[in-house]
Image 1 (cartoon, helix red, strand yellow):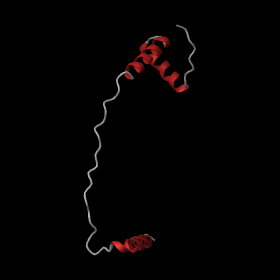
Image 2 (image 1 turned 180 degrees about the horizontal axis):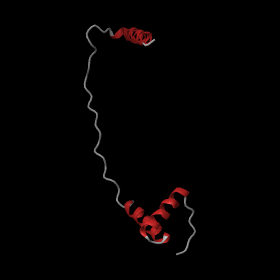
Image 3 (image 1 turned 45 degrees about the horizontal axis):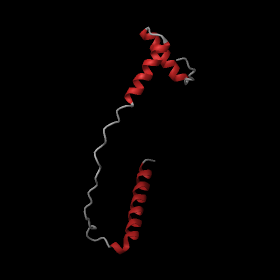
Length: 92
């Protein structure tokens, strides 16, 4: 069957190169490449095993008041900021 097919430049270049190396005609290379691609699509990839997340109850560390978590977070941010400032000053 005769048909017109528009190929992207990179695909045409690879097909021409394969034709040159193998000694086959461009038509033979295109047909064989299409056949291989169509055959590979016939077999779906095997399903992946189901991913399961097991949750476990975790409490807070001793000394952490769950009613003041925002304050705790703020303290952690201040500590991180001070550490980065100290690092920046020592690099001068």
